[in-house]
Length: 309
Image (cartoon, rainbow, N blue to C red; front, side, top):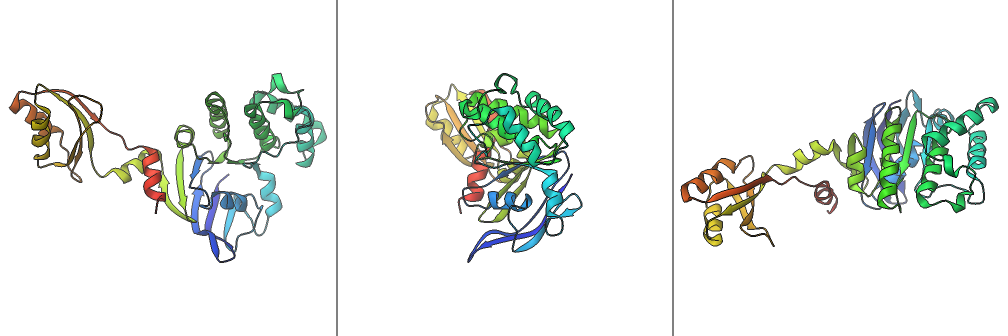
């Protein structure tokens, strides 16, 4: 089920939390929704779930509009907010039964759905424990189970791995990837490695505006523009090598790599490559080129570039 956001604007007083944004999430796609605190991520997700009504614009989930059919949209969406909505005194099975009844699942299907969620979310060993006795990782699993109990076609996850340890993050990440094969998923997170490992596409929002939209590879390609190489040149005096590298026509910036012997970082001029010139320079001077590695732009660097100003 596709999600289509059209010219969405939400104001709180004079502040525009979301400012005329439009995007689409296709069926079966996992979208990573990134942005600094206060960028408008949670506001957008709450608008999609019909938790709040925007001042302007529209959102369609499948053929349903948030303005005309909010109740139909609620049936189609599973939502895990940042603050996991759990009742710590309830056993896991009782809580899932309670949520299933709230979601209007037919009584003769409730037990089947509970067993399915326990299996999918890996809760078999914890199902009779009180939620308050569970680890943070298992509480997140219960949160996912409550979001999935009514078998929604769309899943909205706001910081689903917040506060988890590295092992728990990997477990929840794999679970989301498994779920994402069948559903349309929007995932908000501050953990960029998690987004890159889990999501098919990344959308970055800053100050209520979309500033980037594409795969991790596409975002890197857009931000790079310049070739960056880490090279190691041996058998030459390092200052002489450094000076020679600076004088190459294709080199924009040359720098020493701190803490590594005979190692340099080369940034080529826009749209140019320095690889051949560096190789020929080493041959000409009898130096050994023992390493030449492209330096990949990190997603963290792209995020900072797009959201710092």
